Length: 224
Image 1: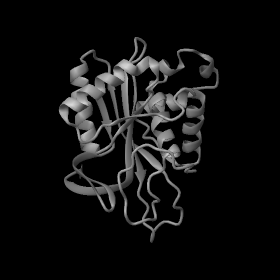
Image 2 (image 1 turned 180 degrees about the vertical axis):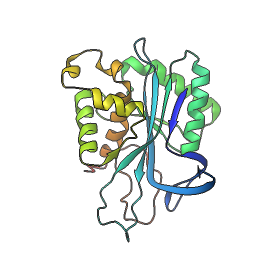
Image 3 (image 1 turned 90 degrees about the vertical axis):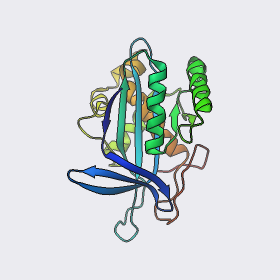
Image 4 (image 1 turned 45 degrees about the vertical axis):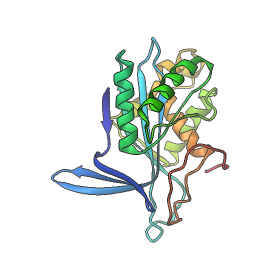
C-alpha cells in the first residue's frame, strides 16, 4: 500500500483531551491532538484501486480561538493496487490501531461480500478499532462532491497539495458527474465524501467542551 501521512506518528492515545499523537518532527518529538479521528474507504474495482483516507477534526483551545466551528484536515491516505486481500486487511488493522479510528464505506448491496470479509477478519483478529460503518448518503455522489467542495471553499477542510485526494478534487467537474464511471475515476473523492458525511450526520463532541470521547456513527443532527 502506497501511503501518505501528515505526521510520522510514534505513539497515539485517546484521553480526556481527545486523540493525542506523538510524532517525529525533524530531530525532535512533538504532540498534536484532535477532537476526533475517522477514516473511510473506497472499494477496489477493475477500474480503480482500494483507497483509504483518514481525517482529523481539529482541536480548538477555547482561550485561543473564537471560531469554534468544526474543521478537518487529511492526515493519512493509502492506495493499494495489489490483489493480496490478507495483506491489505493486516495493513488496515495496523492503520486503525495507530490512528485509533473506525471506517466508513458504501455498504450497499454491491459491496456486501467485501464488507463481510472485513467483518470476519476483524472478528477473528479481535481488533479494538477498525469497525466498518455505513456511510451516510452513499448513493448520492454529487451531494458528496458538493460537501467536499464547500468544505474546502469555506476553509473547513485542508488538503495537502501532494496528496492524490487534492489532485482529484481539483480535477473533477460538473461534466464528470454525468459519467457512470465517476466513482471509479475519482475514488479518493468517493472515500473523502464518506468520512465528511459521517461528521455532518454525527458530529463529534463540541470542540469547546473539555471532555472528548471517541464517537461512532449515529444520528445527532447537522454540524454546519
